Length: 269
Ligand SMILES: Nc1ncnc2c1ncn2[C@@H]1O[C@H](COP(=O)(O)OP(=O)(O)OP(=O)(O)O)[C@@H](O)[C@H]1O
Figure 1 (cartoon, rainbow, N blue to C red):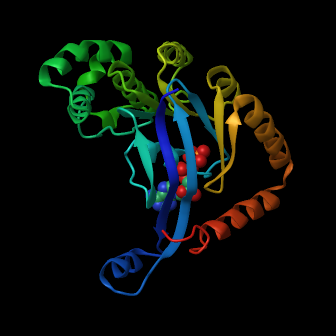
Figure 2 (cartoon, rainbow, N blue to C red):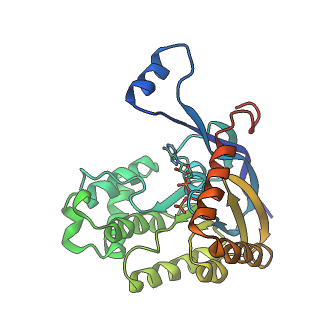
């Protein structure tokens, strides 16, 4: 099978500043200010053409950071992402400009994806129809609900025929009828052999839709493999995690924070 996505040693380090003065000092003064925080550390995996891979992990484990980097929206601190073709991310408000109308966002996003004016004119009616936004298409996106933003993003992505589709929690906002329409479209993409990454807190959707899974914990790869291998192990972890008291959950997060703030842990970045 042809490799469609290759991710090598991906690390994303943010700086956490106590205040704006510290941030400014970090830009202008030689001394290092701010605390390092690793949203992702040394994550590597490969996807073959036609793979449908779910990203799982508790809140803050790094799923959206990984999605954004694979989609080319956020640059990694170190590591590489190789994509065979064009990747498109569907997430609530991903890549949409609130000041522009829905229609202007369609045109801008399509132009950024390399479509010509004529191609955009031909694509626009299908995108607008799929979005079910009606007259709102000519209203600024900042007036949209999160469900409406998600519908716009979904409509653009699925109608522009990307090679790699990344869906980050976009099905969890909006109504069930639209989510079903999107799931049907995603099934079509699957049949056409597209590579897809799917982020969802719904284990049911994960099992229904994906063949493989990547489990992230505290920004690191905890486990990767088939859905049949990863999901039962993750469910077992969730069962234990949900038994923890609020204090124990806080300790788990703090332990993660400590690891993720250790500048030496990820090696040289
Ligand atoms: N711009 C940023 N600056 C600082 N920290 C960030 C930034 N973006 C993300 N993070 C941190 O990186 C970590 C991973 O965030 P991410 O959104 O990728 O997690 P997630 O697994 O998608 O979480 P959720 O399930 O809640 O959506 C979190 O601790 C988050 O606070």
